[in-house]
Amino acid sequence: MQAWLSSPTGIIRSGYEGMFSALGIEAPLRRDKCTSNLYLVGMEIERLNELLQAALEAAAAGSEVLLRHLSQQNDRLVIRAKRDGSPVSSVDLESHAAITEVLAPHGIPILSEEGALPPFAERSNWPLFWLIDPLDGTQSYLDHREGFAVNIALCDASGPILGIVADPLSDRIF
Image (cartoon, rainbow, N blue to C red; front, top):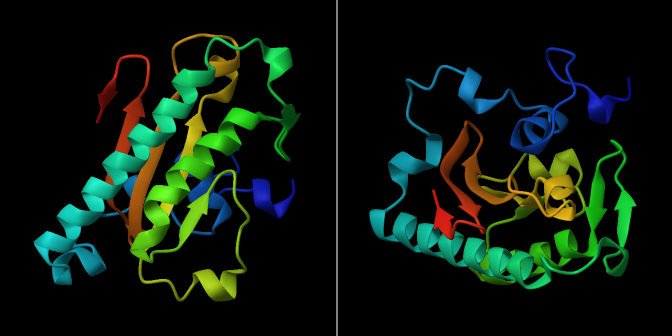
């Protein structure tokens, strides 16, 4: 098994859990979360609310891209396989661009399933970062089925501080 596919349990994962495994970080939901997140404690509520608003706007921007292209036939979308064999389409990349455009001005690094992975030496010094999956459930999307979403999380070294899951079809954000 290649290193980028490995996980602590040996099970290949996708989405956030797979991204955390690929980064060499224990999946936050399995970790004892009794201690406060490192940066949440020191972060002013106003700043946290500003970042939450940015995440909501970014999720809406990504969702709008997905809905705009939903009716297109698969042959009109540029589709290729990622290293793990899962599909990625031009819509994944366009949603990534829309989300990044909203989040980038806040000066927090962005890790995206559809973006380049910076070297660990660089990432290990980030106090905060955005973790995004601009189209979670690409195959469902391409099959014109329910079951796809936009995922955005603000993380520190201990895991997510806040998270957004947008369901474009139901027009709901969690």
